[in-house]
Amino acid sequence: EAGVTQFPSHSVIEKGQTVTLRCDPISGHDNLYWYRRVMGKEIKFLLHFVKESKQDESGMPNNRFLAERTGGTYSTLKVQPAELEDSGVYFCASSHPPPGELFFGEGSRLTVL
Amino acid sequence: ELKVEQNPLFLSMQEGKNYTIYCNYSTTSDRLYWYRQDPGKSLESLFVLLSNGAVKQEGRLMASLDTKARLSTLHITAAVHDLSATYFCAVDMRTSGSRLTFGEGTQLTVNP
Image (cartoon, rainbow over all chains, first blue to last red; front, top):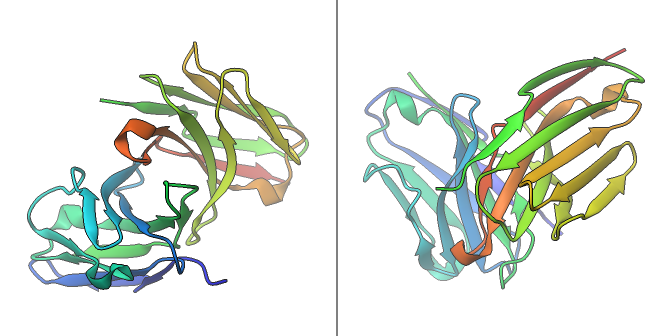
């Protein structure tokens, strides 16, 4: 069974540009989470989808971040426009209800220059 | 706001030695996780601790939980080079829908 996959693995963009990160959860996992680790600090929660609905988006830092999960399958996280402080590793995780154990992807490293 | 603190953040040790990583958290919790991350890889779940006094062991790693002290430990016995990685503890507040709060991670280097 395929694990959680994320794309791209590394993205380098300039300040002010747009980047879209994609996450494909494990098939059948209704719960999908985005987390990020900035500057080697703690991994912080961004948001939680249950199927296509946003269950909790309280961790989203500001309105430059937009997450979607159309159809309740894969999810995208768009950063527009990117700022220097957005650099870090963005992790996606998925789980079965009610939520069960989280399975993480390898992360997408974002570098904003 | 729930806070999770790990120490040490960096640990360099020799093969064969023992050491303990500590994880303190600020409020009551339903469960505590330990994860391992190798560079560029995903977070691998090592242990889930559910109740006070829980102890779990896998190979050279043993994790324990003291909910009264709000403390979990990850003990490494007779370290080997393959254990070099970053270790995270994370607390799950079920009331928040399985939203994990992580510590900063402990970067462990085991030297031959």
